[in-house]
Structure formats: C-alpha cells, structure tokens
Length: 169
Length: 364
Image (cartoon, rainbow over the protein chains, first blue to last red):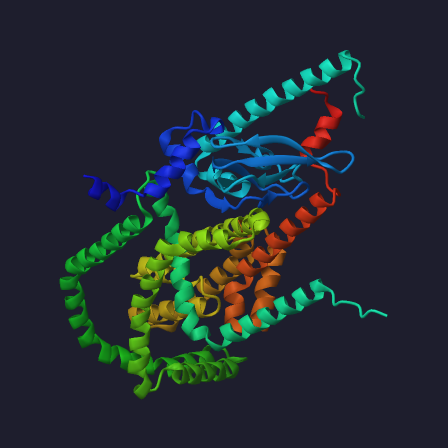
C-alpha cells in the first residue's frame, strides 16, 4: 500500500503542507485550499549568518519558518543593531508584504541552518483570483493578527506615557 | 597619484549588454530550430492550470502529466477509430473529385481577370495585374518537388517534437524554478522571483486574451460564412479563428481557404467577392476593435499602444516581431513599472496607500 502511495503521492508536498497547516495564519483553511496555497509557496534553505532580507529592502513575501531559527534585528537611533525577536519553527514573519510591498522595518538573519517557505504577494493575489476563499481566509487572519498587535502597541504606548517615560516623536 | 578603479556598475552593464547581443544572435541563427521548443513550452504553460486540482491534493506532478498524456493519446486513438471509416470514404470521394477541382482552380485566375476587366472598365486592368502578381507569388511559394517530401516530414515531426517538449516542460518546470531558488543569493531571492511571478501573471493574461480573440473570430467567421451560404462555415470558422493568432499568414491562409471553398461550392466570382468583402470587414474589426481592446485589456496596455507595438514590431522584426510584439511590450511595461515602484518605495519617494489614510484617521 505504501508503494502505491509513494507512486502517486508527493511526500515533499505533504511535508510542506503540514508545515503550513501548523501556522496560526492559515488556521481555518480547508485541506483543499491549503493544498492550493502549498502549491504556490517556495522553500529555501539558508546557512547560518545568511541575510533573508535587510532593513529597507522592499518586502514581497511572507516567510514561514520550517526549521532552524531566524533573528529579527532593527537598527536603533544610534545605528547599532537591536535584536527584536528570534523566531523558530511554526512561526511566520514579514507578513506585511502580503498587504503592501513596502520597505522592511527590520532585517532577518538566519541564526542556524534554516529552512523557510516563502509565500509571495503576487502568487497569493493570483491564487485569490481563482480561489477567492484562500485569499479571504488568509487576509482575515492577517487582519486579526495586525489588529491584536496594534492594540498591544497602543497599550504599551499608553503604559509608557503613564509611567512618565519620554515618548519619541 | 592612484589610478581610479573602474566602476563595477558600468562593467556589469557591458557584460549584460554583451550577453543580450549574444543571445539575440544565437536566437536569430537558430530560430527555425528553436520555435518548436518554444511552442512546446507555450503548450505546457497553457496546460499547467489543469494540473492544479490534482497537485493541491498532493498527487505527484509527473504522474498527473503522464495521466493527461495517456488520456490525450487515448482520445486521439478513439477519435481516429471513430472517424477512420468516414475519413477513408471521404478521401476516396475526394480523390475522384480533385482532378476536376484542380482543373477548375487552375482556371480561377483567368476567370477573375476576365471578370475584373468586364465589370470594372476603370481599374479592371490594374486588378487583373494584381491577380497575376498574386498567382506568381502563390506558385513560387509552393515547395519544389525534391524538397516537398522533406518539408512534409519535418512538419509532421513537429507533431511529435512539440508534445514531447511540452510534456517535459510540464513535468520539470518547477524543478527548474527550485534550482534557480536554491542557486539565488540568499538576500535576493525575494526580489528576483517577485518580478518573475509578475511577468508570469502578464503572460498568462496575454495567452487568455489570445484565446478569447480566437474564439470570437471563429464565431464571427462561422456566422458570416453561414449568411453567405458556405457549407463548411463552422470548420472554416475554427481554422480561421485559430490561424488568426499568427499575424499576416493566419488571416491570409484563412481567407484563401474560404475563397477556395466558396469557388468550389458556387463556381461564381460573386460568392468569392462576398467572402472577400466579409474577410476585409472581419480583419478591420479584428485589428482595430478586437485586438486593441481585448489584448489591451488583458495585458493592461492602451489600445493605441497595442496597435503601435504590432506595427513597430512588424516593421523592425517582420513576422516574429508581429508574433511577439504584444507579449514583449507587456512584459517590458510590467518590468519597468515594478522596478520603478521598487525604486520609489525604497527611496521613500512613494508613501503607501495605507499610510496616507492612517495619517488622516486615528486608530480606534
């Protein structure tokens, strides 16, 4: 039976689809739609120290970490790099590129050997034209994440003002 | 005093220009060999969306392509099995009729010349001269007997080469992209492939526009020739519609086919004149209405730009220029628009839509 399955089924595709299924951004996508989404993603392996993208580069794709770790770094006011976060398997970053192709607000550097899956905005837009449900669900989930982050940022900002810390202009 | 180092960008530009010239020279020299491979890849590109529902279920691409190929071969075999008795009967009947038809067709130029001189006292001689010139061109275009068989074999081989190339392009296309992704420098993966996907979208829209245009021309031809009373209007319509995709040669081949069918059915110049007037009107509608508006809308080019591209492409590169003018211009337009947008955004010259609104409306 496994021979028959291996003859017809693409194990590489299944692996990539399982990776995307575990990502919170794609929660709620039916299996078939997830399959269509997996079809349009690309995977890429980065060596330790490789720059996935630099601050200021135009963002064009969402990154989903399959294995390894990626450090998100931003230049401070003094020009020194400041680590914002380290993301691991099952997490995503660079999601703003799915909405607008604007300069990245931080750099992403592979901490160790890292495999990611890339979902390009152009590919998601093309897929949405033929499978609108995929685009609706993904963008709804994205809007929820962004809304939550904005609320958190607002609360943090209000907290800093209340504590008397100087808020930069 | 130190010697100034050469600017790396100038060197990169010169290398890119030399590669482009070399590529153009290679393609020009091997055009007749390359175009079946190009057609095979175009066929694979057109068939690719049919694989999506199966791949989305995790089925291997090569298995789906093999299954499609088997289904295609099966359908062809079934069609041949069903049509073979009819085809053999029709061929036997045609073999009896063709000697007299050839005799009739040989007399066609003389008949047209006589009718032109009789019906048009002013200008009739000029029409007769034009018919003589066309006759000379048609006779010259027929292959010499010694090369006719070789040309026929080469043409038949295309029906093998194109599906062969198309099958492997379909199966191995993603492998090539994955290899390109793996080879691309890490930081530039995003930028390099993003332009490729946008060009992919433009080319897909162009091919869909081309097919839409072919279907409309087929339909119009079928209706027009049916009104004239031609028996095989549907079959001629299909041939005219799809050969119309080839600039110049396609419309001429379609017109000649319809004229021959009209003459063989009616035997009078009046029917041929009706067909000629219809095709002139069809070409006018196709060139000035269908092509600019359908293709312009499909590739988001202004109709005037589409018309200019075709004229300029034909003037500079002849047949190949006409064939590739619109897709090349649309790819160039997309590339320039994307590269300019990247430049503007990365230089901070262009704020985003969202940021403009965000400045006006506070977060709630």
